[in-house]
Every structure is written in C-alpha cells, then in structure tokens.
Image (cartoon, rainbow, N blue to C red; front, side):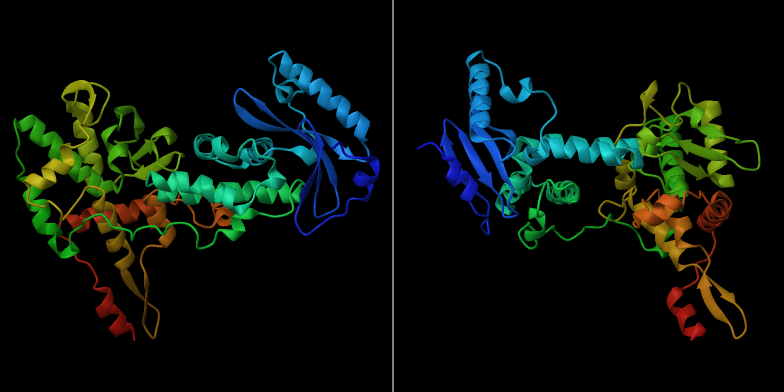
Length: 417
C-alpha cells in the first residue's frame, strides 16, 4: 500500500533506522537522528543498487514519486539512473564508494604518492566490490566483517587488518561530514583472525660473523667471475643493510661521489618498500666494492646476472649462503637484523660518575634500515637524513666486520650499575 502524507509526517525516529515502503522500490528511510530520506531500490545489470532522491519534507511524496518514475524510464532505456544523474549525490544518500573518494581526495596530498596508491588499490581490490555500493549510513559491523572474511579466506591476515583500518578511516571522515552516525569497525574488536606469531629471518650470533666472512671470502661457484660477483654482492648487502630487491637492481648511475669524501648510494623511491628515496652512506669497504664493480661489470647493473643487462638472480645470494653451510641459519634479509642488533648494543662510557649510553641513536639505525616512522606526526616533521652520523656508524660496522669488537651490553650494564 502506498505511503500516505500523514504516515510520512508522523513517523518517529527509533533506536535503529527503519524503512517505510511506498511501492515500486521507493521507500522513506527514517534514521535515529530524525532525518527522513527518500530512496529507491532497483536492479541494474543484475546488481542491486540504491538511489537517493533527497530528504522529506523538503521533497514531498509526489515529487519523490516523480523521481521514481523518471528513474524507471531510464531503466527501461537500459540506462543506470545512478550514472545518469551524475556524480553529485546528496549528503544523505552517499554510498561508501562516494564517501571513500572524498576521503581519499582530502588526504592524499599529505601522503607519499606510492603509499596513497597502495591504499586506494587495496580498497578497489577488496573493499569496494563488497560494500562500495552500499549507503554509508546503512553499513553495519556484519557487512564489514563479511568483507574481511573474504580477505582472510585467502590467508592475507595483514591485508585484512589494513582493510579494516581503511574502512574505519572512511567512516571517521563520514561522521565528521555528517554522512554517518557511527563507525561499524569499532565493533569488530576480537572478531578478526589472529595473526600468526612473527617468524624472524634466520641470523647468526654476532660472535660467528668472523668465521662467516672468512668462508665468504673463499666462496667458489662455476667460474671465478661469477664467484667474485656473488661474493661482492653478499658482502655489499652485509655492509649496507639494504633489502635483497634494493641491491639486485642497483644501477651504476645511483652511486655518487665514490672518489670523494661523502660517497653515497641514492636508491630511487620506486624500488623502496616505503615508497620514498633512500640514501645509503657508504663505508670505505662498500665504496671499494662499488668502484670495482662499476669498472669491471658490463651493462647498467652494479651486480649483473647472466647477461650484461640482467640483474643478479633473485636466488643467487641465498643459494650461496646454502652452499656455505648456512641453510636455515642465515638469510640475506637476516643481515639487517644482525646489523641492527650490533648497532643497538654499542655503548659508550659518559660522565662522572660513569654511565653507559647508546653510541648510535635509534633514529640513525631505523633510517639506515629504511624503516618508516611509527609516529606519523613525528615522521611528518622529522625529515632529517642524519647522513654524517650514519656514515660514521656504517664505517664502524665495516671496521667491525674486518675484526672489531662488540661491547657486551649485559656486562656493560653490570659495570654501569
């Protein structure tokens, strides 16, 4: 039975939103805050959609029915009424996708371009197909959880959490703009599958590094030239703390001032995990390897593979570690953990009475590892590269690999006490 004017006018808000049907897909949506919105449910290309016409009583029953008639006429012509009415959707009838577009546009200027692209791509792949066409103020916690379950089903537990976080940010934006009254993701605490315990990359105790380096210097595979490239690549990874991908595609043009006092490797943003350019100050030992490889290696890559214009194979370095007897004991990525442990354990004696303090600031270590700033606000203001202290730290590390000593942090702590 069609809705009457008296019914529409006298409808009262309830604890939860509810619908009052008028017929042929048109209904009045009464929200807990008292607003009454005209909407029309329809199907297009086999997909259910919702169209928003405006708020009652600004838009009366007769006008809402006229809009319904016009929408049905477009459907009869094979046109989608939502597309035909343009991109401008009323505040009351915004879909999640429309709000997400506004949210993304509002914040992307403050984000790294590569990061912004990753966030939006994740939304397009996992979120929008499930809840994109739903009206933002009608989405409930079970709707979001259903989307998350699809991601969890393929084992991408980290992605599922990032998707939940993104959806929550969109809802916070929607609430601030008056488009939604609550964030359904706040009700999902404890509902997501727990992540498995982190398995750290295998790495040796620091005390075994001298024996490892001695074995590495003697490493042989097919052909002395290939052996030399592999040895230098593994040692260069150990000296610079970079990731395998960052090293494999190292181009000769990325190295600067190799004959000067401040040699540096400038890794472009597109090859970095965090999507921003990374500067690696080079020790004398790392500089020597870079200079010798540039002089000897054909093509553009510092460490060429089987061909002058091919990078080092993805498995070359890890297989070398296997052949050296370090299978399940040391990985190339694990060099980063080794170096971080060494840097964080270095202490120096200071003051009277004596006390022990860190030799290398944690910011230097994290920046050398190209880790992101965990505190977004602090990261936005802290754009320092710390090249001078990092250069000293990397030279100390290279000298240590050549036979230096590590201060035992436990013994140092007892002495300080």
